[in-house]
Image (cartoon, helix red, strand yellow):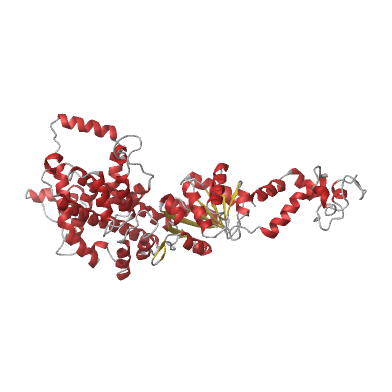
Length: 572
């Protein structure tokens, strides 16, 4: 079918097509003679070269050497056949890297005909072949922006999955030239939310609708059910709601998709999701570090421990895959693969954006910030190796070996489990607080319980306790922090002793646990009714006359601190 489409389109753009349209404006069924319209010299209806009617003498059209008219008529026949039998696709997708291919196949697998396009034509062929191999799925490849757009039913909905930044703008420009008012563009990449809001305004000048949609779950999630976070035009969301609800991951309380809100809210929520993910991964790596180097546990033991944790309160995608990672042997050398991986962590920018937004909105997010700092430090591999050698020569001794002796492994494992759980709750609390602050600033009216619900399946941070986070916000939509929800508060108190033992042990052993330390410090700072910030504000008033407030009376005050300290001044 697709081959027929492409041949027709090639004919339709050909010079001969223009000649036929210009000199023969009739349909084959109403034209007395194709030959006399295009070639006036052939006026004899009984000519041996051309039949008198384009639909008589069908055998001549099928002969080894058919007359010229048969070639001219084939495109028209194809066109009539297409109009009679070929339906337009329900949706389109442009950008066929791994995520794009898998999401397109997911859509087709759910029974929705989908058109696909990519500038690199081999990607189109590859995707079409996969669709055939995976069950003759209703997926149709196209090789030009115009052909692609026109293959989709109105109002058209086109998903873009290309690299964030300029490639998105270029793709929008190429496609929007062929789109009509009421059509919609959906950007499914990890895009900066302000770029989404800018593009929303730009395409609105053409009458187009726009959605910025976060997609989480990696390539497997994209193929079999991701978590989707669409924000922007509500009408655009309504147009494809039925598709998204089928394509998304399914959990017991519904599909993992919801309309997030206006503007760039969908991209912002996905950005914070990724920030939480940064914190989550860092905390798991610290648990691994303590168990391996203080507890002396082998990879086989670690695999079993994480598998056991995944059957309890820590059940989650990241805990599950961590257990799997510890089981994989190196196929190029002896030992386990994880031990051969260079200790440098990559990143794509969403974690940095999260920390920047937290700073701009004055929201404390130390666990997420610590995870970002650790990625930066991991990149300084040569510097770290040099520092280790220099400090060793300066007399620094490793304390891990001495502490490992006499360690109660069973207790250590349970303590680390509790410390990891409590630290993870702090990371999620920080992310939710950032979302709340941005929602207030932008008027998005985010539903935090619903966000927790759609993260329960499909996405990278999916975890069993997200259901409890959802219920916490259902109990109190204005919850100031997860730490003060009665259920989570009890759990944090019950785990703090083990949490402190793990952090203290790691510090004594010289093992860095910046995520756990930052989480514990966040908890201790948040729970204290009075902080030493009074001294900091006094210092600010002394050197900058920034004034201060008092606890016993209203108003702003300033003191000439040095003069008063030396007996020569007064309060003001």
